[in-house]
Image (cartoon, rainbow, N blue to C red; front, side):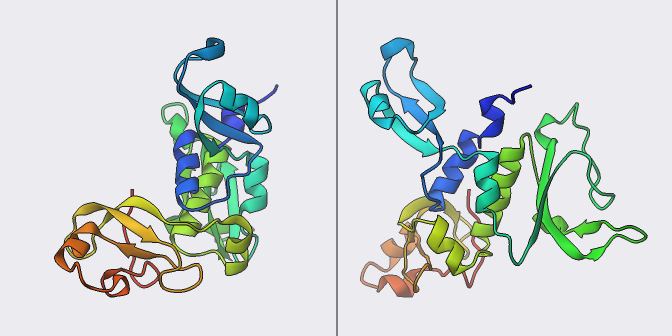
Amino acid sequence: MILPLEKQCVSLEFSQKLRDLGVRQDSYFIHAFSKCHMAGKQIGWYLCTADDRDTQDLFGWHKKIAAYTVAELGEMLPKDPYWISVKSFWVTDSVPPPQTESQPDKRWLSGILDENLLPGTLALKWRLDTTNYAPTEADARAKMLVYLIENNLVADEWKERWLVMSDYYRMTKHPVTGKWEKAHWADNLFGHYRYGVIFPSDQEASPDAKIQDIAFDPDDIKLEVK
């Protein structure tokens, strides 16, 4: 039985998150947005191969986002220093298995394994703060990768291989006011591969201040994003 392409690749939602975090856009498959009705296509997102992008442009592909496969994500996930595991719904006793028939969004689990064994077994414990449920293995791996990047748990060597650092804007909760703003994540503001986060409200309040003086360093303070 051949697994449908939609289950082999990361969903559009998490493909967009990986792109926004600066992950390279060189996968075999892509999510492409068609803005016309040519060749029988309706306006909307399509999952297709990335090797004929010139042809796709003729049919109105407007946006293209890398849709990494399970195998590609397996290569991308760091091998050291974490014990990363991705399992189907039958998991160890340290994480209660979800009712997959009623919760299809929890068929797969990803997380970092602890160094300690479960009592009386040879199974490693899961670090519950790192576990992520997902409906497909691809999304489970993608969510794990998003967690590692957002929490700065990847080495510089990994970043040099897999990230294309660039400025972007993302809804971010201001750590002082508690308000959500479309913040500017500025590349290399606090050093090599270190973002600085600038909130519009701070720029309005201090228009003459240096950017570094009003920006927040996500390595020093945890920022909530969505």
